[in-house]
Image (cartoon, rainbow, N blue to C red; front, side, top):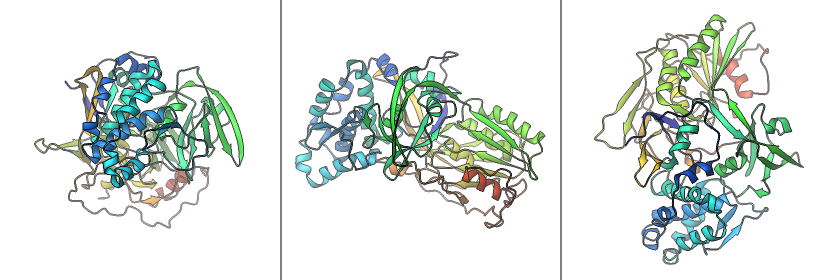
Length: 518
């Protein structure tokens, strides 16, 4: 039974808990659902250990390298939740603070297990993942987190055995958190990236506890609640920063060699889906930021563009940085506001070749015909890549910033046969831009590259052991929309610390990305 009727496209940044692209649920969620912890959602499912133990037996784990690595990822993912590592001897021990090796991704976590299997196959096939699981269950996992840990283990297994965007999620969590139109977060208020092998604050959310405490972009995170974070998956670091509203978290950071300790009280932060700003000047422009392709985003975009048109701006900066995606229907609708109803925005092709491909048109009349520059970075994924890529392919915008994440697959959700309180989201195919390209694994290269700075985010091919590859199709070449890469607008009324936005503004009027250019 299908859980929903609308495909979602989100970056799978956390295979242990969230992951992949989603369907929009037909089930009605409460008007204002309480923000609960991930642990609570999984506990409500009543998921039992047997579901994981059925996969960790020796006959399964020893049957092939892929099964072996899937079993390893299951137990390593669970251990990671408790700041533990699992050795190839089967020993479990705490992560030491001085550990220098980078274990921030699934790919890096599993590298030692791949080497172990390759070099000592006979020994490796006798390794007991079941014993490791039992040790974790009996000595490290609190009873109230048992269902969550089984879910983490199952998703760790699925990520390698199937693909990193197929996953399980509590239905209630999907309805009350993921499918909502707003971004309601109960968090310390920072977004994390990587720099020089360390976890670094990439962004501080305005009005959050971290903002009030004076944490800054570029601060190196050393510990969260006393736990060294160096050897943790980035998804786990993000989870440590979240929690119940009113709960406290202690963050230990380094700034210019100085060690700083901050105790924060988590609070609910609502991130606006869309923001609009009009910048006056000799050549007035607008900046529209879209944080998520949520239900109703296209209607909000229409309102924003109406405001922008009335302001008689000369061009638009469309900011899709750190936008993880959302509903593909909303993406197609928003793109059509710039190109018209009759332009193909993208098409999808199924892994099941018996299913016919589907073409998506936005269906809306063009409402904005001035130059457009789209800002992108490594956090721009899925539906954000659809819109950015389609506008460029249709000669309607130039892209400024960094190469995008590279998520071009889509998932469809059904109730899991083993537990109806859990949904299984399976990868069903890939989407392709008008040029015939799919951003899967490759991402979108900007027309004008401006690195965010030295703080990075791991992309699709960097994170996973078995990343998906989209089948090749005929790809047409693209024309350059930049009339002169050396052309700069000298007006300085908008200069600020945002180098990507400044650069986008500088090249906006050197671009041929206007209506009528084909």
